[in-house]
Amino acid sequence: MMELGFGNTQPVTGPGQPAYDPAALIKLYLYGYIQGIRSSRKLEHETLRNLEVIWLIKGLQPSYRT
Image (cartoon, rainbow, N blue to C red; front, side, top):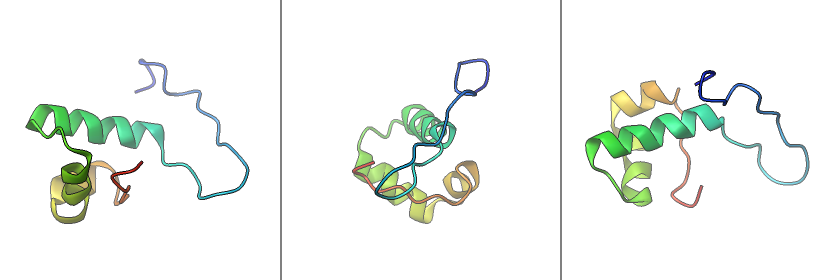
């Protein structure tokens, strides 16, 4: 992920929930692409039930609206 330019991300301060790690979201999107999952709701479901995805994104559970 560092080679793709995702190493220099800075946390944003302000109101609201803390941001998800961009590298984890890219991993989730790549997993969905490889598995043929195009729906964000289906990706959200995978983060709740699929052990591979839970391990891959270190237990994060982003909403389909993320």
